[in-house]
Length: 110
Image (cartoon, rainbow, N blue to C red):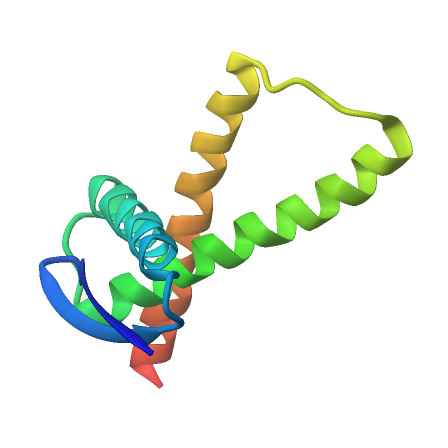
């Protein structure tokens, strides 16, 4: 079993993976880091746990959309992504991040 050191939000984590999967693990860590960077750009600094929770919510939302789009594309054929669609995704990302912040804030008050 291989071990890889990944960096997310300035912290190093040693993670085990199957031999040969090191590059894939590094790419997944880069995806998480990208989400955290987006969250910081939208809402400023947050605690480590909150940033990771928001990144997880954004990834889960993206996975949900991909699954739904696959089902829709199977029924309607492939679609092309326009500049407008990218703009709409960015706006949605901002809304999801804001909503996730609200949920996290509510949880902290409990």
